[in-house]
Amino acid sequence: MDMTIDLEKLDPDYRVRVCDDPASLDGGAWNALLAAQSEPTPFMRHEYLAALHASGSAVAATGWAPCFLTLERSGSLVAAVALYAKSHSYGEYVFDWAWADAYQRHGLRYYPKLLGAVPFTPVPGTRLLAADDAARSALLRALRGLVAQDRRLSSAHLLFVSDADRAALQADGWLMRQNVQFHWTQDATDPAPDFAALLARLQRDKRKKIQQERRRVAEQGVVFSVHEGTAITEPLWEFFYHCYTLTYAAHHSSPYLTRDFFARMAATMPEHWLMFVARRPGAGGEDGTPIAASLIAIDRPRRAAWGRYWGATEPVSCLHFEACYYQPLAWCLAQGFVRFEGGAQGEHKMARGLLPVATHSAHWLRDERFANAVAEFLGREGEGVSAYVDELRERSPFKTPPIGDGA
Image (cartoon, helix red, strand yellow):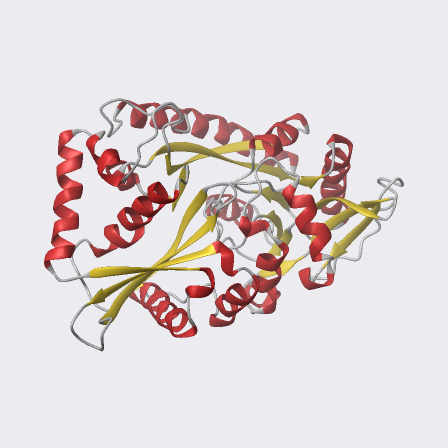
């Protein structure tokens, strides 16, 4: 999508650029700016975003046309936001299909819309990269100016924003939306030393259920190996990708990410990946036959992990829970990590020690009539979500809710 727009007049103190290829940006400057933010994640690193584009995963042909917005001051990068012109709402995990339908019923076009997010990645974190408050304010002015100057764009949306982003966006008049995810956070006052200790803190019925599920997997002869960073070999990446595609095939859909994307991750960000491989010993060689794999993103300096992808070549009762929750949680506890995010949706995660956490998105709609209608809707929806979160917290799986549980 051609977005050659004159934004310099909006802020003459800054050099404003709109870039359609992340690889053309200075990766070192981008990552340095990201590292200075309050909630950086590996998914906002230049390598990750560039790999999404270069691998053909997030490109115009798949409905994700990059138009990254950057601001320079005195020759230095001081603000940036990863933006995409979207022709649909797939792969976002904040659902606005009803808004698009309402636009269509009134003879208006909702797409293209401008989206600030990590494609296919519902992980909260900083979206507005800025060196200071002045640069952040200028970035928001440029972002709104981008929508104002290109009449094709109906709206702008920033998903899974950080607390600092949320404060800036609220002050700038954006509409705010709340949702819920489920995260495990280590008890800040009395850390659980290992998985057995974590289980001991759960209510009896929850503890017994987890023990039964783990026993079912063990009784079927399944064992796990753990591979981190460069120890994830090319054959393991190949096996994982096969499993990943099987998960999508089971839901009659196509994978968002290409094999080349994961090859680029192995080459440029190996330190941020952890793989659990389930095997049946005694067959297929000394290590056994692999039957499933889960891929976890990690950030060792910040002691955080994110459950991302999984798949299996054969059905095994309770294997999904073992591969995607119990093995990663046990590893996090052994490694001294303090947070594990289980991904989008899934109230069933509560029974496995992950507690509800509010997530936030911000929305700016050009059409004032629709903006007012959406604002009214979000007010009602927000009350419902808040009540839902309160209800979930009253049903904590723990005997005593941990301190630092994301509330």
